[in-house]
Amino acid sequence: MGGGIPPLPRAASALRLPGPPGGCRAATLTVRPPRASRGGGGVVKVTASTRYALNLPRATASLPARPPSHPAPSCGMDKLSAPYWTYLLCALGLFIYQSLDAIDGKQARRTNSCSPLGELFDHGCDSLSTVFMAVGASVAVRLGTHPDWLFFCSFIGMFMFYCAHWQTYVSGVLRFGKVDVTEIQVALVIVFILSTLGGATMWDYTIPILEIKLKIFPVLGVVGGAIFSCSNYFNVILHGGVGKNGSTIAGTSVLSPGLHIGIIIILAIMIYKKSATNVFEKHPCLYTLMFGCVFAKVSQKLVIAHMTKSELYLQDTVFFGPGLLFLDQYFNNFIDEYVVLWIAMVISSFDMMMYFSALCLQISRHLHLNIFKTSCHEAPEQVHKHID
Image 1 (cartoon, rainbow, N blue to C red):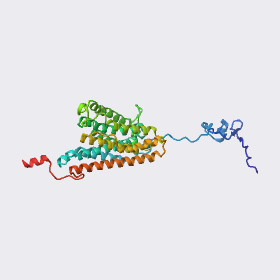
Image 2: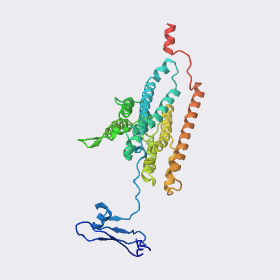
Image 3: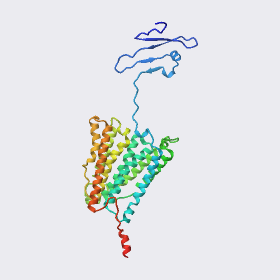
Image 4: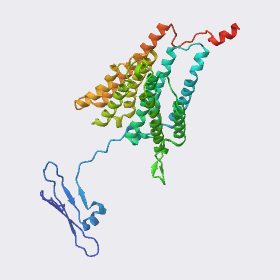
């Protein structure tokens, strides 16, 4: 070998190392190859004097050979924060939307354009905005670090909106409480402004004495508001309706509208908890928007049932999207869940838009109304003033 290091034996390789100062004897590092077993791995043992010779830290006295572990799945919202200007645009857009939503009735009376089509547009836009407000607020406070809280805050808004129109379908009157949708929208505007000024990471700040994160306060506000509002809604629903024998305005059971929102919530929870690929944690926005499209159509059908005093039927094509995800899980993810989620999103959004479009066109043709135009006729109260 010409002065080189002789080859080591195959079964066990021994390497003579110089000893540390102070008269200690030299150490021998013995390396045994791992045995060919199904689950075992080799272990390298290093003595104290060997650590000195190799300049190894004390923590490496026993180095188990193990495969790299995969990190636990995390929610997609906790990886990155949106730019600050997006929160500012959300605050500005929500404030403009809330203001226009509050004065549209006055504008309709001024232009003599009050019609069922206006009510349909109003509640239809509200059903969609509820979904987007929930997603935007969850991103603003970085709820992605807590997937269960994220799921709750995303779907509780849809549930409360549906319950508001559910009690209207039962009692025939749309009631507003002292703390209602306007106050919630103003609170969300404040949250967006705070995230703009301090960044979304400010909600991860831990309060020293309480040892809780700042983001828990918006969550507690949502929980308290949900308990207060839902108690008022179900107090009206369970006390009977204005129909015959305490039924709804359509003469049906006061509990019948609960089947639709119940199916949506149950499917959302089952798919979230039973997903093998953690589809909600990885794609929370897409998941919420897909179910939001289903919720928007079902809510609009409830509004139509109230306007026409008709029965609310359970069968609907909008359930095909969540049904695909459910069947894919039933057959052990025969197709990638992310692909199925996109297919469900396309089906649900297309079905919702087709229903909205057909509904608006049917009402406008029957009542001879223009959808995006207002007539120049004066309001009845203005006509009476001119006659006098």
